[in-house]
Structures are given as C-alpha cells and as structure tokens.
Image (cartoon, rainbow, N blue to C red):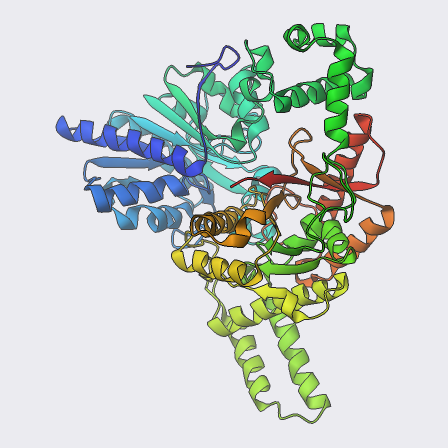
Length: 633
C-alpha cells in the first residue's frame, strides 16, 4: 500500500539482503514466466554497490534452484568513458565478475554501452544501442540504483526527460561516490555513457533499489515534485515503478520520520521524544519553550489529546534528553543514578572496542576511548581488518627504505631488506592498473596500519600491546576492493576473542554508510558472535552491554541517541592529534565516498553538530559530543 505522501510505491525491508531477495524473486518469476511462453526475457541491469547482493542471490538461485538465464537478454544502464572493457573498474568487468561468469546467459545476449572509441563512434553506438533495445521488444524489467544526488543510470541532475542513450559528464559528487572503485577521485573517469531517462521510462516495469544513507534523496524522489534536478523523481510518471529500500534508506519518508502526520500514531516514549525534538528543531526553539499552539499548528494536536498539557510533555522529553548526557561512559562508580545510560557496577569494567578498520576507534569514539581509559577501565581494542588496501604504494617503499636505513645505521645485515626493497620498487614500477598486490606488499601495508593503530593505543595511554588485538578477519583479505561475505571463520575468531576477554562493555561500529560495506560485515560478525555465545549460555554474556557508535560516515539522529559523551575543547584537540597518528590515511583519504574531507574534519564537524543540536534543544552547550545507541540481544 502506498502512503498518501508517497507518489511511487515503496516497499521497506529490514536490510539490503532481504530487499535484494525480493527483487531476485521477482526477476526469477519473470524469467520462468517468459520461458513457459518460449519468449525472451529482456532485463535492464544496474551496477555499483547497490545490486551486488541482488546478483549474489540470482547466482545462488541459478546454482541451487536451477534458475536458467538462457532466455535472458540483458542491457546495462551505463559504462564509464573512456575505459577498456577488461579494466577492473569497467562495468563490463563488474557484471561478469558478479553475475555473467556464474550463470548460463548466452554471451551474445549480453549488452553494455561501449566505453571506448571516438566521440563520433560513441554517438553512433548509442543510437545502435537504442535500436537494439527496440528490436527485442523493449525492456521487460529495469533494475535501477539511486545516486546521492538523485541520478538514475548516469543521468545527472538537469538531464532531460526526453534524453536517450548518450555520453554525459559526471558531477563531482558522483565521482566522489564512486571512488570506492578507484581508490581516489583522480582515477575516476569524468565521463560516462548512459541510457537516457526516456529510454528508462519505456521499460515495462521498473524496480529501484536504495540501501543505507540515502534517506533524503529517496524522500525527495518519492514525495517531492517531479523535477529534472532530482532525476529519480521523474519515475513518478511511470505506471509500474516500485522503490525497494532498506530501513536506513526509509528514515526521511513521512510515514517513518513523522508518522503522526499520516494518521493514527502509537505514542510510545520514543515516538513522543522524536516528535517533540522534531518540532523544537523545526521551530528553532528549546524543548521547554514549546507551547500548545506550536503543537496544534504542526500536526501534534493528537499528542496533546492523549498526553495532556504541553509543558508536561516538554518536561518528559527534556529529562529524556538530559539523561542521555554523561561524562562517565563506563558508569559512575559509587553512584546510584536510575536514569544513567550505563550501570555503575561493576567498576572498573573490561571494555572491548571493535574497530572495523585500524582507525575507526579514534575517529568515531576517540574521546570516549580516552575517557574510559582515564576513568580506570580495562580497555581493549579489536582491529577487525588489516585495512591494507587503503595504503598507497608510496608508503610501502618509504617504510622499507626506512627499515634498510635503520639496519644500516646500527650495523645490522640488511641484505634481506635491501632485496625486499628492490623487489617492491620493481614490482610497483611495473605494476599494471588494477593489479593485485603481492602477498608481501599487502603484508607490509597491513603492518603500516598496525603500527599506526598501536601508536594510537599508546597515545591514549593503554599500558602495553596486550590491549590491542589484530584479528585480520579472513573476509577482508582478498587483496581487491571486492570483499568476501562473512564466513564461519570470521565468527569463530570473534567468539574466541570475546570468550578470552569476557567484557562487560562492547563498542562496535553501527556506521553502515562506508562505501565498501566493511563496517556492516564487521558489525554482523560481532552480532552473530554475541548471539551464539548467548545461546551457548556463556555466564558473562548476560552482563555484557553493547553500544554502537557512528562518526566516520554519518551520525545518529538526535532522537535515537541513548548515551552522549561531552568533550571539552582540549579533548577535541587531543582526539584530532590521535587521528593524525594515522599518517597513511592523512591528507588524501583513500575510498572517501561522497565526502571529500579528511576523517578528522568529518569527525569534528559531526561531534560539534551533535553538541550544538543538544544546546539548541535547551541542554548545556559543549564543544563536542560523541553519540551511542545500545543494541539489545
């Protein structure tokens, strides 16, 4: 059922995996339906990170359920220009890597726009692409992703509704979003060839998928006016289009963000908090300054009817906000504070910070990390992956060169290190584009990041290296941008560490907007490990609380925050210098996604914005705040 605010049908799933299964099932049904009629099934396919889980599910259905693609004719939306087909980042390579190499589609039925040739050649080939689609009877089902600026295919804002397959210039934001495929923005092509909006609209059915931090653009496309500035909004004019999104991507829809505007609403404590905070921020008023007129003129009269006086509601929300703020993230010892986010006892606690990459601990919760240690807790950090693909080749030769010089300085035989340095230089000098590093170079890159992480732990004050645990989870160690799914080995390794440490507090990254999806895999591994340990009856698990942090890519909504750790200006600076220790990630951020700023800048802005928002709602003004949400299992 489409909500009254939504002009396109929207289906919300718990996560990308569930949403992808739905799309895969619809595609499979259509393929089989066409096979029964002895007809071809013409699919329009998308690339990028969004459809990867869809293609994995289609491959699974082919292998395990006998789904055949021998009647499928595929047309891809787009391709970079200029790019060779065999380049790792080409969409030709992407499609074969994720789908075509694993199914029985006929090679002659695979169609992608051409990414090489002169501009005149491309223009001619684009016209031929359009004709070929028409000759097979048009696209039966078109799969789309959604760009952060609302683009579909590579139809950037301003693309005409009448546009056909053509060469286009890519916006800088789109190129930034695609740096996860290229390591840095300078490598991302500035042009692409894409199906036009007119071509897409001719499809008989359209399924658009959107996962993660795309709530704003989803809401604009679905609930806003049709405008070429948000190309996806033009899909409102299609007669059979559905958006398939996950819960993260649904957060700005009216029925999710402000459900009281759509009809009846269950006024739970959390819903009241969200409604009042939303109202206060909208009107730029502190919570305690809201009045009855504010409520009635902004769709909250039902809340007044159910809960009574506006001031009493204001007080309830004010106390809920106030009670999330604490300078004691491990609990305040010897104090009985019923509304405190954390328990006072036991004290000190054994705390484990799970850090997906070797710098997420200091970037996202550096202030809390330092405060936990300073307040006497036994803090351990589990670095879940090596982070080796995010180290440049220049750093490798720089550090081997240092090792050679170090040995020479102290009269140590450096023949071996000299040999390694020469081999590394020769390999890097002749390294082909997209070539996977040798195991030795990957190991050196991992060592660089491990040394930075150890230095950070010493900077915070951890007493020795026994507090830092480098898991090097297997799913990450592919040597390429593409990672493996979570495996049993990843879970067992994490369970082993948890059993060894038996923590009373666990912190892990709930920041699922990273462009590679590494954070999500790491979080799923921790969740699965904790669930299994609970089911196994581990006695310590009932006293282990789990807190989720964000900060590297996005931040918790103010109404979701359950624990906010304030920071002074000095603490902000100390955190900044801690981030600076990660020199391999400094100045030029590898795989930066849509945000071109360095991580320390992102973290400080998010932390200060959280503090400013609390202040705007009537709380004490702090320089910065780190925010957490508790996960219950």
